[in-house]
Length: 555
Image (cartoon, rainbow, N blue to C red):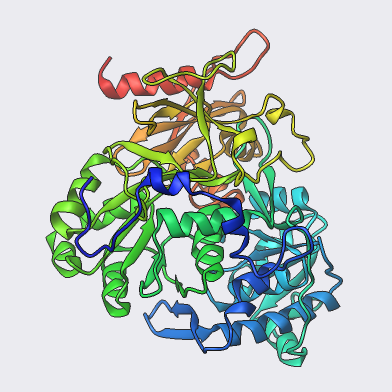
């Protein structure tokens, strides 16, 4: 493992593990998991008093506006009072369909101040994807902006809507105008204390055979998020931190909002879309030293050419990668061209990050490996019978629930905890352990598609396709792609008398894009007469996927 010359002394992984104590983590909370705590206090109020910057917002024109913890405390109190007037109380769900702007953080903190639960909605979602999630959570209120508001018109039994910039909108006279309501609300609101097992987030994860599943996140997950920021990201007080991930997804909400704010550290939002030139300018302008994102973003930086490398060389202290396996060529490029270590991290919506090449700990680093279990988690590799396997034996990565004190997931919403009945949570990823305990990935063991860092459930895309009158059956798989890891491909069986051509294929793409999301639509569409199925009628996606792999390899 090569040390970064700008780093300070770090403990070894073994040293830290031998001294790991839950009591030390609990002492980092202002509240108490048993007697009561509040996420807004932990991520905002307790850091007030020194006028520290909490949020750096960079607009699309690259104008920078900064907000202190004191300002966020006042705004979150006003937002909490607005939400309370709308009928929100402790344990209720507040959904946010918002871009990366101040209002998103205010909504999150305002919900938490009330003891409510925040649910993220990615702004690229269409009405169908939004409806799935709102129905799952039973959200009582949705905060959105004018650009996103029309999507909610198609939602059955839509909850109360609070709109940013919606003053005087004649089409939605019942909406609560966010700015007007905030200005009229009191800036005093006592935080509601909750227990560590009470929820403060409601996430959704991609499903392979059904609708997206609700992932309840309890307050005690704060300990795991904090541990990741300290040990894996190695966030330091003098770092300028930028997590490129959107807070509409787990990695962004967990580690671009919650993790840094819990530590009293500023986080950075860029409102515009990702491109290499803008990213390079923002890094240089703000002096970013710690960068987190997906391999897709890093590949785009590489593709921008030597100009990017020349501008960024020596700027970054370290880079973290998550969302999909980190390609060896990216590691080499960052090392040779930028002179900065980039480490792969692994996790899921259900448990946060749990296997990492830790920037903050010394341990062997193997290119192509996701690293070692984060302290507080014990990982195992299981065979099909549930037996633990040794080194160099492929199996399914699992979390040992009985020996992982930071593991906070205990089952999907309203689905019980049968998946944990034998004491293990199975991730669905095929891996093998190296002799030193590090985890090397083989691939997904289920049908979830990973494209540009997004996890896409094929069922969602298939359901959207089946809404179109020309489609009677559909199967969706991920096809290997050098830029995006995988792209979505749909195999479509058409209704009798319907001709499959390029025009219809594009119509279906746009249909899914509008109904579901801008990242999950099928870039490839193939019309087929039938789909491979089991005797019981279940679609065998793995046959379609393997056929595509064979086609690419020339078999």
